[in-house]
Length: 176
Image: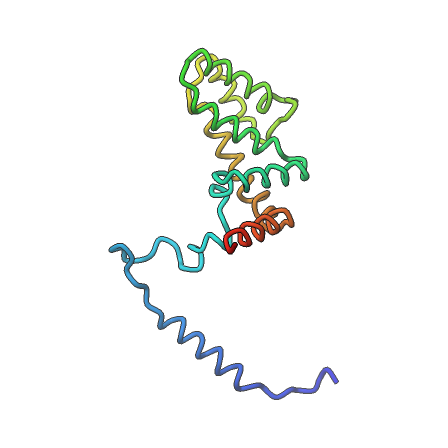
């Protein structure tokens, strides 16, 4: 029965050709005098897939994301990111040094209680900057952790029951 040649469905082949012509015939409209839009229209709908940046700005979603990371035993990433954000708001040089040492001991130092996953190069760069810390001494590590959360944790969170139920609740409140 496997060697029996089946007739080719012409309607499927014609539909494929038609779709290809339709896609090729599309034109891009100018938006704000740009020759091409910065994002395709299907990617601009943040309601479908919010970015990590938007999740971190919204207190409800941040709390849910934090709880989700706790359930996955990786809350040190968000805690480090938040500590770095707080560190950037430090005005006093004395407080800057103290906070920098606290962050290093808690998150960066090898065998730290909540050690984050950064490479040796970043770790050594931060260690050498602790003598005279600047507001940007943790930037490279913070970016690394952010990208890790964006690529790994955030997509899983967006498919989790915690996020979906929170999203459902916020829609329900909007309609009420």
